Amino acid sequence: MIEVVKTHTGKIYVDREKRLEFLTVGDYGKENNIKANFLGLTKEINGVANTEVDLTKKWVATISTQHGCPMRCRFCDCPKYGFHGNVSIEDLQYQLETILQNENVKHTDRFNVHFARMGEPTFNRAVLGFSEDYLRQTVRKYIDAKTIHPVVSTMLPKSNGELKYYIKNWCEIKNIVYNGEAGLQFSINSTDEEQRNWQFNNMSLSLKEISKLAESLPAPLGRKYTLNFAVTKETILDAKTLTNMFDKDKFIVKITPIHQTKSALDNQFDVSTSYADYDVYRDFEQPLLDYGWDVIVFVPSIEEDSDRITCGNALIATTSN
Image 1 (cartoon, rainbow, N blue to C red):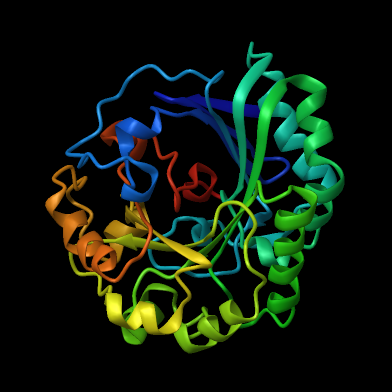
Image 2 (tube, helix red, strand yellow; image 1 turned 135 degrees about the vertical axis):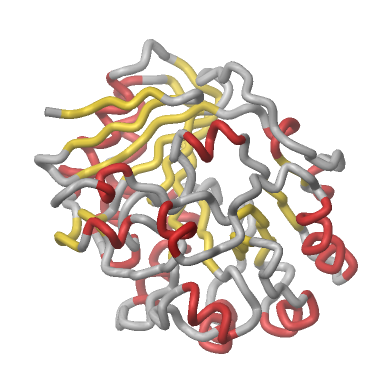
C-alpha cells in the first residue's frame, strides 16, 4: 500500500513494498527563491516565504533511480536504507504515472523530472532508455506540457566504470533528443579535495578526474551543465581553482544550502540555520561573479526543509527495511 505524505508544496509518495520513494512539488516562482544575475534575477533572497504553489506554471517530479543508494554521502539520509538494486523502466514509469494521475492538472508550462530522490542515476541505464523512449510519451498521456525537462544529478562515483559513457550518452539525449531541454548536474560541493572526500565518503572522483571528464563533454545545447555546491559556512569554494578546472562556456555554478537531513545533523554539518540571511551565499557568489561565472543561488523555505522534500532526504530510510 502506498503512503502519501502531504507537504506545503506537494506530496511525498512512499511505497514500502516496491522500496520506492518519490515526490511531486510546485514552485514558488524563480523570482522568489532564486538569484541569478545572468537571468536578470538580481535581488538578494533573505528568506523565502511559504506561499501557495501553482502546478500549471511549474511542476516538479523527483523520482528514485535505485532502491536505496550504494553511495555513502555523509549529508544524505538515503544510505540509511541500504542498497537494494536498480529500479526498472517499469518502476520509473510507475513513479511518474502515480504523480501525474493524482493531481487535477491538465496543463503546465513546465514539467521537470529530476532523477534525484534515492539512488545514483549513473549506475542505472534504465534512466537513459526511459528518458529517450518513454518519458515524454508518459507525460503527454496525462497533461499538456509546454516544456518537458528531465535532469540527471550525479555524485560522480569513482567505482562506476561506465560513468564517462553514461554521461556522454546523457549529453546526447540532452542535446539531440530533447533539443537542449534537459539538465546535467555534477555534485561538487567543495574545491578542497580533503573536504570533498570526507563529504562523499571517498566515493566520488577527484576534482582533477571530474575536470578531465568535463573537458570531453560536447558543448551543451540550451542550458549549460551545472556544477552544484551544497554549502555550509565551512564550505571551501575557491573561484580561481574552479575557473582553472572547468569551462565557463559549458558550465554554470549552482549554490544551495546543505539541507537539514538527519545524517547532516549526525555528522555535525552546520545546518542549524536555514541560511535565510544572504550574507552566507554572497561570500560564495561574489568571487565567482568576479571571475565571470554564471551563478544561480537557490534558497529553500524553512517549510521545504522541514517537509523533507529537498535533496538528501528519504522518509523510507528512517524506518526498518
